[in-house]
Image 1 (spheres, one colour):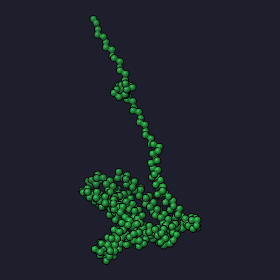
Image 2: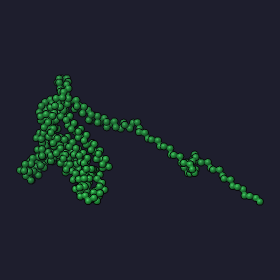
Image 3: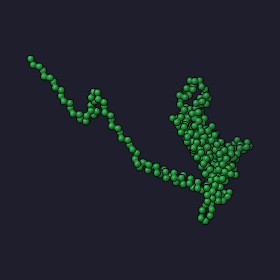
Amino acid sequence: MTTAPTPVPAPAAADPGGGPGAPGTAPAPGTASPAAPPRAKRRPRGGAWLATVPLLAFFLVGFGLPAVAILTGAFTVSGDAETGAGSFTTANLTDSVQGAYRTALFSSLKLSALTALIGTVLGVPLAQAVLTSRFRLLREAVLTASGVLANFGGLPLAFAFVATLGNAGELTELFHLTDHGWSLYSFTGLTVTYLYFLVPLMVLTITPALEGLRLQWREAARNNRATALQYWRYVALPVLFPSLLGGFVLLFGSAFAAYATAAAMVGATVPLISRQIADALSGNVLVGQGNLALALSLDMILVAALVMAVHLPLQRRSARWLS
């Protein structure tokens, strides 16, 4: 009786991929798959910082050198007229916060705070009304117009208001505003003029924050039987408060730094710190007050630095809440 030969298994073919784990091969039972090799981290190129050199150079020439000149000039008093030598003094800073200069500084602060407050109160409801409108074309038109009007200032703005609300303006004669005590060339008239570009600026500033209010918050307040007033008082306004305060600070800085509109429209009728700087530089009142003008400029820089120190943290906090 013959038996059938036992079949011998054929040897496994050589792995062309270089062993287990190669593409097209399955790992042996009971063995773990080898980990993929780590990817090499891309290192930033050493010369990437060279792209910032033009920006840094522009910042140094456009902001750094004038700041150094203002800082040194504010603490210098002119000496010998022939050599131009000067000596260190603090009299310029002392004079810049006394007398007529202090009055102009307080008037500028008052005008800036008042216009910023009114611009915030008027800009927020306008932005909310535009965002909740069902007409997309209206929203785009208002936002586009706000972008244009927020940058509309200087002599064109002064001329537009003089032709409209001046002593012989169209609306002044039409409604007989002069008989009611209206005067464009006053603190009130300058306030109305500043609102022309501050309200659109507030609309542009607060619109992203209003868009960040989540619909779930309103629905949750509605499910808890909260009225619209309660929602805005306890939910929306606390969340928007950093953005509102940041927008107020931004409007304050814009009004505080404005010069051309007030200079062309009211002149010296309303005392402003920017006008005092121009008069000191041009010698309209006293000759040789250039260093005093630099001290007044330093006062404005300190106010602007304080404004930015308040605005930037508020902006970061608002972005964290609304993100």
